[in-house]
Image (tube, one colour):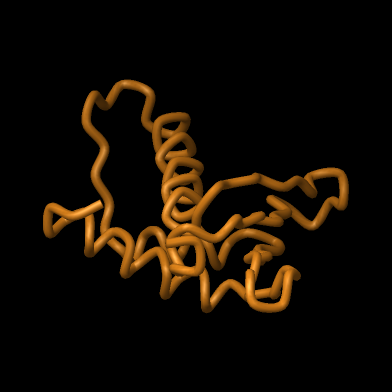
Length: 109
């Protein structure tokens, strides 16, 4: 269904450090894919920090700390009803990431 939250085009805007040169964006077909992308960023960072570990695990508090540690993070999510993108802040992203990971942990996608 095109209007379902999980199937809405999502652009993640992020800035890793105070330097404006670190501004970038990531483009996804759905909110769920965007949350996978944010988790993937964190997982890659963990692998960089711990290159000798084969399996890396983390909890939601660790992910929240990563998100809070970014200089800036927001999302633009396409709303079909108004044919425009709506902005969302890092708190919204944290909430969506939590629900996304919870759904995955419970065997859903």
